[in-house]
Amino acid sequence: MGTPLPRDPIADARLNWERHGWSDVAAPMAAITAIMRTQQILLGRIEAVLKPFGLTFARYELLALLSFARSGALPMNKASALLQVHPTSVTNAVDRLQDAGLVMRSPHPTDGRTTLIELTPDGRALAKRATAVLNSEVFGQSGFGDQDVDQLIRILGTFRQNAGDFSG
Amino acid sequence: MGTPLPRDPIADARLNWERHGWSDVAAPMAAITAIMRTQQILLGRIEAVLKPFGLTFARYELLALLSFARSGALPMNKASALLQVHPTSVTNAVDRLQDAGLVMRSPHPTDGRTTLIELTPDGRALAKRATAVLNSEVFGQSGFGDQDVDQLIRILGTFRQNAGDFSG
DNA sequence: TCCAAACCCTTGGATGTCCTAGTATATTGC
DNA sequence: GCAATATACTAGGACATCCAAGGGTTTGGA
Image (cartoon, rainbow over all chains, first blue to last red; front, side):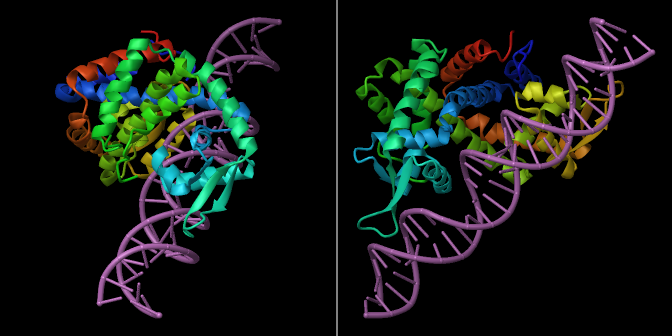
């Protein structure tokens, strides 16, 4: 995985698609495959930055979400919905963050079914430090031009809305 | 995860970034987060289509790659490089495809270190059928406009090249 | 020639994601 | 008021990914 390939494997796949008579879907296939690969690269960069903090991307996202909540606490199901991940994934992340002393579980005051996730002072401080490094090392050096960033936000925003992510 | 949110969570995150004085990286943060989420949606669609075939995306990618190789066989390390995944992931995928009778391992004729992965007739037939459904159900209904597809291929292609994926 | 370095694949361990069930609590309808 | 339904979280299993380490093979310099 270290050495660059002499040719773009996705461009090659697109040519293969066209050679097999699937020209009508070759371009979207290439675009979708490129999204998959780009996500993989970006996730790798993010995880490398977070590793010294003992965080993974999944755990960081939860910490960041909590740090933006006014009370610093959210119900599990709310976090699951906002992060767009399966409830069991939130349970998993909370388990580990709790072991690390970064969040606490507390009962919901009126609904006995609901568990609140609450940021500890340590968790809030770590979220702040991790965000600062992420901003400077990843988001500030994304490698996308300003106009391309705007294009991505527009194209992927439309896609996510059509996919039913949000109604906005 | 079923009900659409009333607001775009990524747009909200961008507003939070700006409110905290990180306006300079708020847009790339939103673009990168959107890529992560879009990948998640697309992967879900792909896996749903492949499930009836007993395939996952990782295993399908390997089958498709082999079906485009002239001899129908590739060394493990070649497959790892072309698919841009860790060698152990290829080992894992080959194990399961071999159990399903879709590929075979065979020794390299001249290099005793290398193992060749070879498509069986069943594997070749399944790859063909799965690709047909993927083309019609996913790539043919991507939800991206033609111009947006071209933009994505351009933007992400540049990004991947700068990230060292290929030297092309 | 010969041994160390490089290379290739596999195993074992850790993480994360999802799915299917199962348990506990709330709400609704009769 | 009590049973039926709905909701919220947890437990266990299947997969995929990566890293670290190990054993076999090849290559190249001393």
